[in-house]
Amino acid sequence: MILVTGGAGFIGANFVLDWLALESEPVVNLDALTYAGNLGNLAAAAGNTRHVFVRGDIGDRALVASLLAQHRPRAVVNLAAETHVDRSIVGPVPFIETNVVATCSLLETVKAWWTTLAMAGRSTFRFLHVSTDEVYGSLDATAPPFTETTAYEPNSPYSASKAASDHFVRAYHHTYGLPTLTTNCSNNYGPRQFPEKLIPLTIVNALGGKPLPVYGDGHNVRDWLYVADHCAAIRKVLAQGTPGATYNIGGNAEMKNVDVVRSICTVLSERRPGRDYLQQITFVRDRPGHDRRYAIDATRMRSELGWTPGESFASGIRRTVSWYLDNEDWLAAVMSGAYHDWVSLQYAAIA
Ligand code: NAD
Ligand code: DAU
Image 1 (cartoon, rainbow, N blue to C red):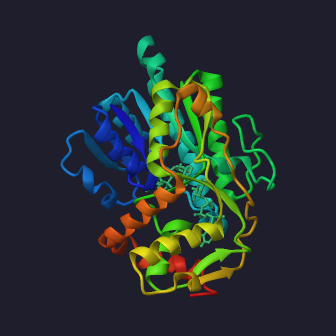
Image 2 (tube, rainbow, N blue to C red; image 1 turned 90 degrees about the vertical axis):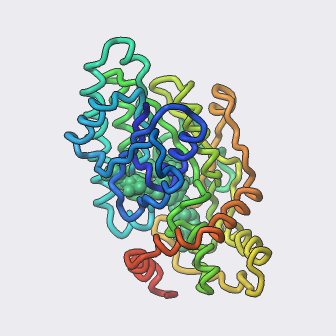
């Protein structure tokens, strides 16, 4: 079996559900259920005996050690993290606590267990760490995309904390021989993304008749990847990746933020006509230290592992908008009081 951390979050839940549908191995899913984690994301796995959910922290060494001893996973896929850049600007400490300290604790607990395995189990074991393209910093408009050898230049507390965790993963491979794999992926979108991130926030605000906040001039560029494609890439790296290697994963779909928001308005005006969603676009104060452009060169994923994204942005955004329109109960559940507290704090000027 495999142990997945953060499997009640956006990418983690999609990964677990896809895994249960496509693979035969069971999954132990360890998640602390922070504001971003939601058992409703895993509703489709209810009653599936191959899915074992455990509420807990990756930094809880006794808990993680007991899960490893009990379930003897052949791999750990680490998705647990604090993930929202704006929250890291408001308060970096939880990002240091989870993305650096707790991730190091997880590595240490896994390493201690892994060293007790027989040689065959030690060599086939994998620790796959899911990271981000944000560790590479910001690109100029004409700069070539990030490759696996691009120097790390993290600019936000979030990306600095992820960069630190990546370095520890690297060090655990180099120093102790732990068979690690690291993936650095671009912006994901799709079902079950918490509506603090640009795409789901735009969808819910548009439907609610609220402003669609675009930071700065709206010309910051992100490389968008549909979440199922990211999950497929993680499965590929887990199955075929070389221990110690890192893999850049991207959608080959660079877009300016304002164009992403406009495209959502276009889909909504077809699916839910009657309102001029474009009129709701509101340019607001820029994010401090806002990275201008991210772009991923995914040549290694394509040439070494045969992975390419299956979804275009045009098709993926339609599927995503449809999912949110069809899952109003999910939205109502996650947009609780705490969600409104965040929105009022972050968007005070336009609330
Ligand atoms: P998310 O915020 O939706 O979910 C994170 C999950 O981790 C939540 O379920 C939360 O409860 C859990 N968690 C947080 N702290 C924990 C802890 N200490 N112990 C156990 N569980 C904990 O995040 P996401 O967008 O699904 O991202 C998953 C991973 O992928 C992260 O490592 C993130 O850095 C990385 N990533 C995300 C994107 C993206 O666009 N969303 C892109 C590239 C990489
Ligand atoms: O690149 C991968 C990263 O993508 C992941 O590592 C992060 O976990 C994930 O949150 C995401 O980070 P971003 O900061 O790029 O995503 P976000 O959806 O917050 O913002 C996307 C872009 O849209 C960014 O340039 C900021 C802008 N934005 C965002 C929000 C929330 C707005 O213009 N308005 C908004 O209200």
